[in-house]
Image 1 (tube, helix red, strand yellow):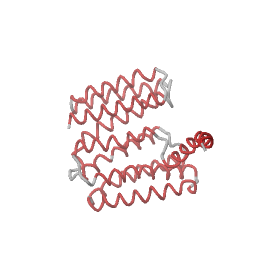
Image 2 (tube, one colour):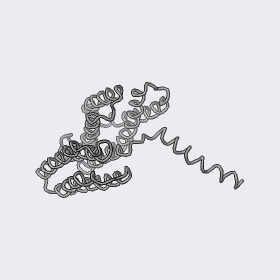
Image 3 (cartoon, one colour):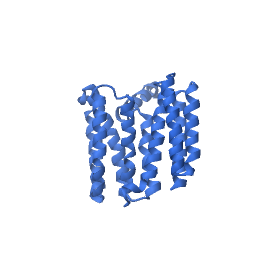
Image 4 (cartoon, helix red, strand yellow):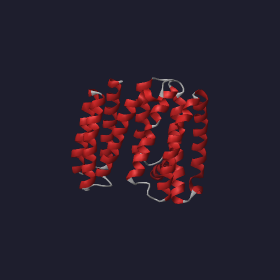
Amino acid sequence: MSLRSSTDRPSATPARRRRRRQWVPPQHGAWAMLLVPYLGGLITAGFSWVQLPLLIAWTAGYMLSYFTLLAVKTHRLGKVREQVTVYGGVTLAAGLTVVIARPHVLLLAPGFAVALAVNGYFASARHDRALVNGLVSVFAAMLILPVVAVTAGAAPWSVSETFLVTLLYFTGSLLFVRTTIRERGNRTMLAVSVGFHVAALVVATALSPLYAIAFAAFLVRAALLPRRPLTPKQIGLVEMATSALLLGSVAFAA
């Protein structure tokens, strides 16, 4: 019995990993883009029970969009039909709860629809990793901020400042990650990234001096780290730290 368990264990772990990959998108950076704007909205607009089903709809909706776009890209819906069905059902149920409680959130739906249409176009063309597509995805992720505000009973524009600084941060993050992985060694992309971070520092500091330290740190990260041989894991740890720094700044400025 002990001999059987010892021989089964090595194959069990890869099997679990394969099952996890079948249901959880291998896009680790996407989780920051999902959770940081959502948490920033909570910090700025306040908490309401409606934001709990909103979080479920938001995360399940991301899963649904990932597998749907994967089907568009590969033309193999059958391979992900189960994931699309399950995540679609969860998104619908949680989303209806939010809409019934706060019908005004539907006014923000066109923004998400346009972003998904653009993502669908790039997926069908097999250019889903294009910079423009990434920028559209960043903007779409930021749209959760006014949704969080509406579910809290506040006006969507009450989170405008948090929306802008979060958009600046994640746009810069997208450029930074590209300079360390996909566009590593590309001096033009590095110059664009550093230039953007300089502009972001100026804009964020103009909104509130409380953002100056965080955005100065983001600038240093963008200028220095692409020159070092970083692993994806190290880049992920850096992004976790900078995301926490952004949320801390939002909390102080709120």
